[in-house]
Length: 365
Length: 127
Image 1 (tube, rainbow over the protein chains, first blue to last red):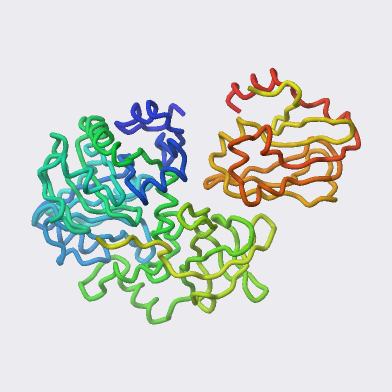
Image 2: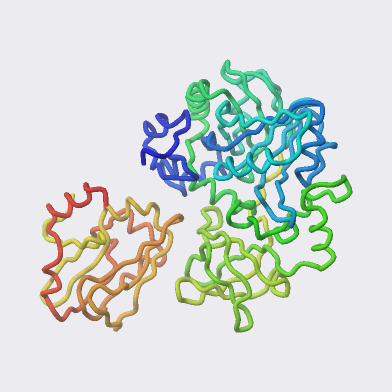
């Protein structure tokens, strides 16, 4: 696998006995002690993920806000310094180029965080837009990213930083030092648990990894890989690009209405989204629980009333609920929670039922 | 590591022959590659298969592995405990984690199988 890229934490993964696999052109840890173990650790204590492969773009200058405003459906004007929001790049048809986070670093400076597999495509797309008075740079190589997720995340992190974590609300961030290294400490994540995403210089990544694991080991902190990352986000009902969202899906299809602020002004895809909304949804992203024997997986077709009505976008065995569940698109008539479905699992029809997403919600602190 | 009385397929199944029946399971290498087994799909007693046919699947969170019978025959017993305790496959793949017992027709089907030493070398090839 020598053509694959490696994050600054590669040696740590090897030393920890990780199973490494290709992912989006990177050699990444899919698991260490096991997907179920790591998943349960995140739900009960904490897990530490290396997500340094993700991409970051810096947008700066007097027209930085206007540029991002025209490029994304969520309202950047309402995003003050110290806050982040979930958003997207959309095509003129209103479909997803990528989903992403936008951070307001300062009045004239924003950071856009994108999926690893879409870095080059997203940057080319953004670069092709008119941008006088805007500095746009792909700074992915300047950032390593560690995600510390779980109910014990704050208690593990606090001794390592002077930043008052209790004052950093969900989708807010602060800048400070963690274990002596400059970091953006962001209360965000992709697991459905409380947690932090820590942006540091690549040179600091290993030291931060070591410091966190040492501080967290007594509390049950373990390294966690992409396998657990996927089962956690699926239980939390979070979309994954290439599965629930792609260039054929709109935010309306995917239940992501809340990231679209039609009244904020023009943005790429707005016209198409207005038209699509007037037509009404043809299909819906739903959650499902499998009642029969079998594990529904991506691509398996969904049937009701004797015909195919959709397909699975993500499916797994849930470590928390100890059953097969997942998400998929179905025709609107079959999207009500409780609707009975049949899923074709490798030639066998397995009974399932539409269930509300998210499957898992953490207890509020 | 690999019992010398077993024979092994290139798909990481083990076979233990006893007169005209054999027991079939998956190897320690296979269970390790799969990870924690969460679901096992096995055939029914009485089903008949050709050599090389798919007789079931074993699933972990991330992966689905097909199980093939190297030998033509009839399923005479199925390990029902795996439905409720699939992790037995991880804990004791060469013993309590057995999958099925097959009454076979042609012992020549076994000629293609490896012995323990050859199988151990095979697992080290990175297959």
